[in-house]
Image (cartoon, rainbow, N blue to C red; front, side, top):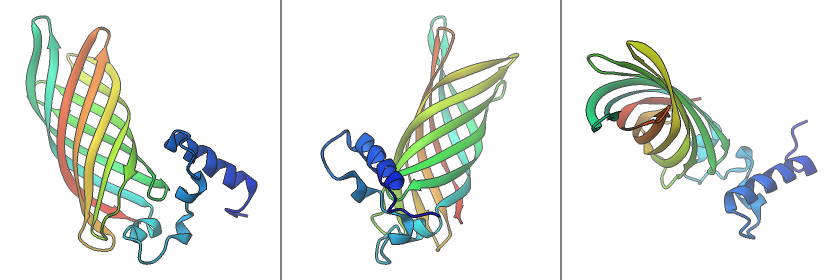
Length: 194
């Protein structure tokens, strides 16, 4: 039985809320409203009805690679796919992105996990911010595994009830042994919710 009034459900929401609020003393239960209780007039109602998203991204990747003399700027293309799930309506979405970054002589396969805070100012616009870990396999004569952190800011622009565009800006920092690399991704692509 899925009853949101049980002590277990209340404790889970309270602990999660206290974590997000930093123990600010505000009632944590108020922010973790079950999706079936979201009012019809709330701008994020469609997102509550369809909490799963899938999409694709096409973008421009600016890489700053470490070299013995400093860093080298390398422009690259990017193609990726993602899946997202709204975990707590209007508070937490989790997105997993897998893609391919490519230059003339190098291939990178990054996997990002974003924990995102969504905003729903209107029915057609849903901005978000997020952070999370990343792994990237870089193929340049040999494979190298880079790991690091990713940040994102973007928005879903809904063209219809279930179809829209994702516009996103990501900043990533990754390390391999003692080398540190940075990249900035600007991407756009279709998104659907179900």
